[in-house]
Length: 248
Ligand code: 13P
Image 1 (cartoon, helix red, strand yellow):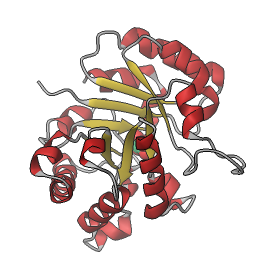
Image 2 (cartoon, rainbow, N blue to C red):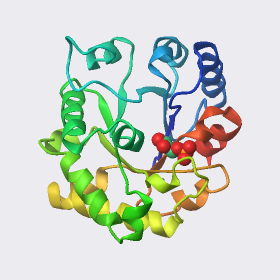
Image 3 (cartoon, rainbow, N blue to C red):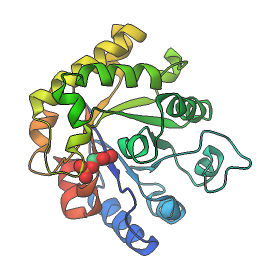
């Protein structure tokens, strides 16, 4: 059986106390879960949540990271600080970073390379907007974001990379891509990876789907050959919804 990668992106939600309570519930309810599980709380709760998940089967992730190691970057969080707190995974290129905060592919690529240089695992998010989808550009956008995001990433480093396909129009909207629509883009992304590296290397990369994943649609999405996991937003904020997704 393949091992799926189920990740929770908590975004800008939870105070420290709420984050600790949520993490404790997940640690106890996901004990023995067969899938790979990661949670990404806000920076302010990473330390506390890190203590809760220590020694469990849940990985600690961060939602973003600075493109520089240290120095005069007011308000930024460095890869060194994340590692210091036990973070092993970082989500980069999330559509909210791209579209609200104007992060470019080149800027995201710098972060991807820095994270990998420091031994972190990376979840690189790609995905088209509604306008781009309606213009028939979904595959092209994902191809481009994947290529630019991975520029300069070696074959050896690719083993630490997960791609998350998150169609922007499906995030937080309750509209999820149909399993067949998602599968088509996942196949296209795998083809891009095969072109950049090799067919064999591309097969080994886990490609998550993200965008309104819920307990009642997770099974049909995970049934697709090229969907290897989920990056969950809203439904990751409650054990009642994240646990059934992780255990689907
Ligand atoms: P929702 O699950 O809330 O649609 O968010 C998806 C997402 O952006 C995860 O990174």
